[in-house]
Length: 143
Length: 176
Image (cartoon, rainbow over all chains, first blue to last red):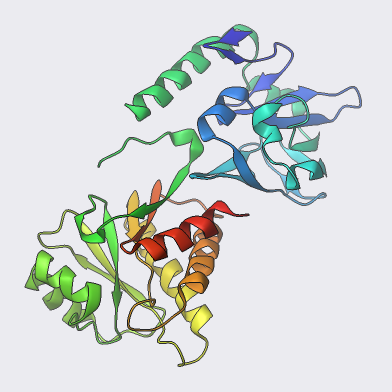
């Protein structure tokens, strides 16, 4: 799906704090930030990632993302254990901007309560009105 | 200057070359001394432009330790509050920690008051003689550490008046 020029792949789930989640075949989930978020934040200069083994709850801050002007929090869309972080981002965090759904992934989580957590995320038709509202909010803030 | 913010980016950090006293923010930070006698530097200008009420409220709260901060009204200034922070004098010892504490304590007071915006000058780099590049490093660390927890602050401005200081801070904050 494309909303306002921003790509939002249909197979992903979206959290209102702009993280996306992709279910993997092994039962784990991959997490990143959506394209609209990266475009609004500007080039990411630094990421502060969690440690592998960290236990987190849905809605918790599990990292920090810094651009030249903003410090944003990586809000976990699910509960579970961090099993991998994308170490390549330490060399080039702008992958979050240039390839948000590919090389710009941020962490992999082994979910502990996935079915319930997925119920509170957006997917399919519910993504569009939310993204339109977020784009409007961002444009209003720039006026 | 009441800028609207984009909430999902959480906290905006801005390095600004400007006159601290003219900023329309919830609070500005004053580089004060232990006795909160605002007789020199930026402190004197704050009282001169904001009014004696700031000195009167400060005197009731003094003295305070180096690294601590207190809050008063801002009198006639465009800001709503002045947070008076005491940074270290170069040579007194443990300067880095004291400066770090002065910045974090200022941010904490703003947060406790539920403020959304704050502007901080290069504390201790005037007559207190603390090196500007070290101040920029510690300012960055203090702000980033503070932002590890939830805060009401949506905008943190680091405000420099002199061009050389502005450039040093800009460089520090643009680097990893």
